[in-house]
Length: 322
Image (cartoon, rainbow, N blue to C red; front, side):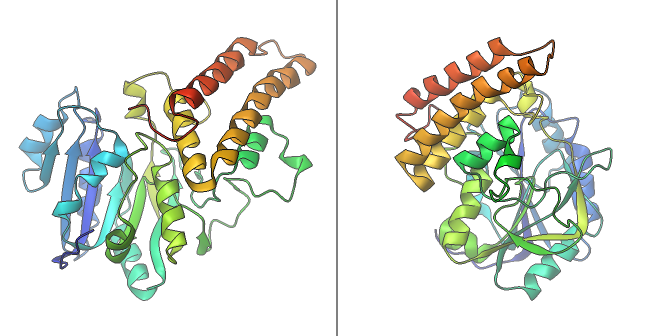
């Protein structure tokens, strides 16, 4: 990564994909939170089919705009902004994430005071004010299996990805923070780059935080300010979103396979496939034993077939399909 002298306090990157209805609110919140900081805003449009590009050119002409002829994926779109960066810090901000008036100032001030912190996230809440997972452990084949099956009570020593019992009112170091508000020290970007382009959608920030921690940087959760995050607005324009995670199932499975194979080896990727297949049997069986009307055998059979199909298509988790 070539290093460029910082001319701004903050470079904010927003990837736009069919979210013209949300972008004005996100941009207004971002601008209202400048609080004396010099701000560079880069918007990458990922071949939106709505009026996003026209809106940006008309109302946000002071922003730097990159327009893609096709959807290149979330991580690759963010990477396109790298040659333009001018900030001491880089902020990755979703178009469905709305910062509070004090968010930028508080998080930049925190980073200035904590040079060991390579990136941070903040308290995330929904539009209804309900707390969302904001500081997380790295996924493993086991903790994903336990989450799906609800059997974590049998293995209390296993750290789950999302532990909502954590004290979310206290600053803490964690494994990774969600990418809807991800503030990154520029030196870390220069050292480890931004997102791995093999992830089309999902797991980009998990992989990035894994790489940053391996390079010796800390990941911090700072609860002194909050961001309202809707979630799933871009994804739902391209297909059915799962009820639990509002994720496109195939992309989520593929990124999970790529992550485990890249960071933990072939054995971890295979173990994940085997445990997820077992979960596709256990979950409907539990519902049957409880006498529930909707057991879900068809859905889980389809999920298992998709899982094994993608395991083959990705060459056992080695390469992306797009």
